[in-house]
Image (cartoon, rainbow, N blue to C red; front, side):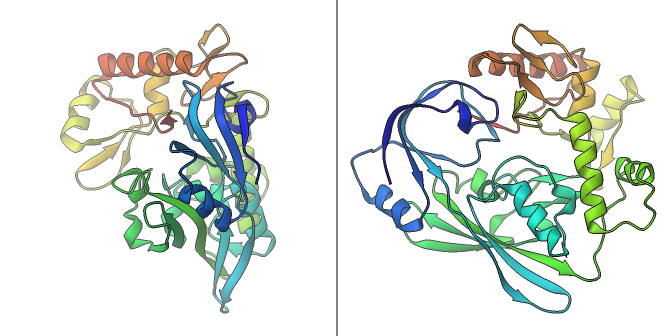
Length: 337
């Protein structure tokens, strides 16, 4: 475990923002993590995982701890179910592919989501009708006050749309060390009711899809719409899809009858943020070396050399414009640092 100083974080965040860490260390064991947090040498600490869900707007005047815990294993298995544990530092997509190679079902719709396993429960990642909470069993997390490891069940995590206890009152109090998933064996329940997945499977000439087929369809869809962070800096979807009350929606619908929408509950309706942003005129718009992606209005991009402050100001401009036109506030999904 070696502590470095004045290290660029450009390669550690998918936006490719060239912010610096005053101090930096990569940790690959729980013991080293405990040692760092029991030390008073660096009072300010910042946890860094896959760097996929954050926008750096400044240098980090702290010890940046890169969580690099690796490993995955089968805990228990029956004829129909399996419990899989993954360490927090495992790449999410590579972990999904590993489960698919073993024909374990449940994560196929979440293929190609950027980031690491350890950050996946924090915002309850989701895509194409599936959320992390659907297969989440539990996670182990380090209590930063007591340095004891605590286990959080699915219920204890209080999952909601792109939300969990780790974004609420437990924020900054724990570090997720590992996650356990409950996946299916043999008879898988496929989630292909999203029209775009059905269309992609038809394009692939597949009428009886496997979980591997669904994953391939999801990958194809995401690659056709979302830029590769290795080529264009981005954090995937920058904004959450707003969920508004039925009363608010009916008022909104009077002025925008063609707006797409999805029923969340008897009292709530979800309106796609991408549609709102596109209708506001931002899709494909560039501002020098940054802007809004030409294929997906939810994605803000760094074409190279942009600062986090510039991208943050663009996000605020989009929020203000959408609120002025539609009367709907859209929230950032990424963490602003």
